[in-house]
Length: 288
Image 1 (cartoon, rainbow, N blue to C red):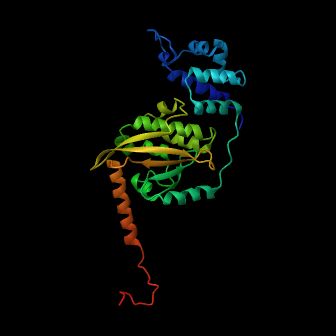
Image 2 (cartoon, rainbow, N blue to C red):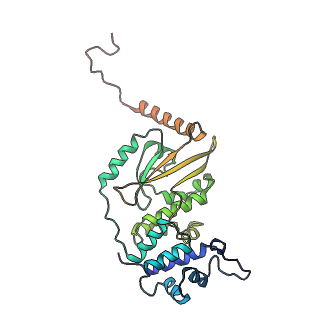
Image 3 (cartoon, rainbow, N blue to C red):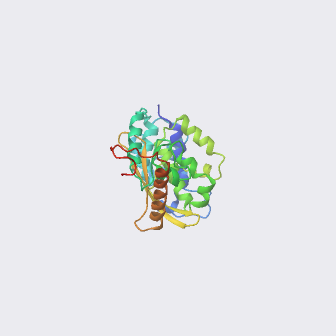
């Protein structure tokens, strides 16, 4: 994959629009007609000419130097993940080859051992490739293998029941943009599918590529009330771009009781559906 200076220019415009004058020590004048910084302000803060910065936003002028990239990252207050994303766009870093399927299968078997904690494994596109039983049932099917975390965030029940829906959806979109190959057909498919959704165009146009690694869902559960669920994300060394998400509950909390009740209910179902035990002893059934 070659460098994508056009995409780099789009990214610069997006970050300029969300960076406020107050964030960089400038006063907001009454006649400001842009949502964030002006081009000339950005160029001044980054120590470059207005003309050169304009060429960068237009995707012209060749590959910017490392110093230019780091200067712009400083102006926009970007973290390490976002800086890596910028370098990936201008250097044309090669995407890692598809990981072996057995790695995901092995992780899936590990997740199945976690019977009291919902957990799932998602790939670079946030498609769920493995999910334990508790996650599958807790998420109304949205956390089952074959589902997509980002697409499910725009489902009506998620908009209704996740009280901090905007915050959590922005984090999911940032994760998608960070890990998915920019020219991936699957990424294009997801973006096309969600383009008709209210709020998606606005949120996607921010070009966020970093967000909180861990966050808390404030979830409304019918018949229970609002529960707080801590979502913890872990990168997988053997599967670049993949992540394991664990939904945790504080001990003694309402969420912990909900998880425990669901786990017990699922265990009872497994017992009821299990075939009758076969005696391997010489005694007759009943032990007499």
